[in-house]
Image 1: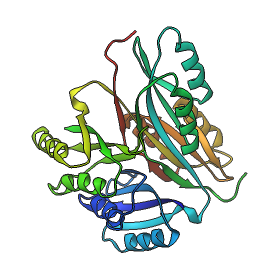
Image 2: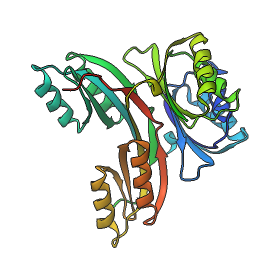
Image 3: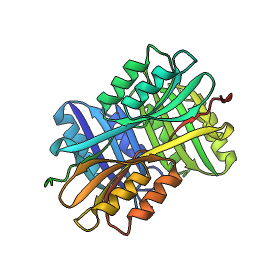
Length: 161
Length: 161
């Protein structure tokens, strides 16, 4: 099962290695990972996605809690949440295909971030499925390069308008 | 100096720990990091930002090259590149402030991704400076939660239209 885990940790050298080491020590692969500062420069927020048996992931999150410099661990599977990733795609765009590429980018609310005579670099955000859908549609036109952030997640506020 | 380093690596447990370990072993902090799959499910793309003396960062990238399972290492400082990050911000939005929050989000081309009676969760993309500018403007209104991806980067195509 897919688990999206959110971890608040002290922004110090070595903490990231210890967190990722907990997964690799059990032979568990981290599918995607993001870490960056929060409003407090001493605290970083890490979001990781791993597929595995619920029981093992639960063991790992318990061990995460025990790590020094780890402040808070949340398995998003326990709540409703919004998840997003961003991708930069360099796509072949020559005279004959440019209009079609722009149409597709527009449908997915993407933004062109770099232009050359032969290609566009575009930025697209969405959940994993949407990003995969864009990639599948652009592939036949010619994807030259692709760089993705990992997934980030935020719990939904419970009381809606 | 700021270094944005892009690494292609085999998608196997333990590789990420070895990469981050190279930095922490020298007491160097990783400012932000993203890792995710590429089009080839066996290959992941990692982007990290670290601040440090050029010489030390050069030594670290050389050692990265030597790591088993590392396919390619690029220090973006050697080229022109586009860099982007994404942030999810939960911001206080009550009757009196909602219109103002939406105006700000609109100016920065953000998207509202979750709504409650007391808050909006918004998604904003841009380079580090833009993201910091949004945060600075929204802070007085009341930021309740913030989750960022790391920075990702893509070399610019040289020949422009």
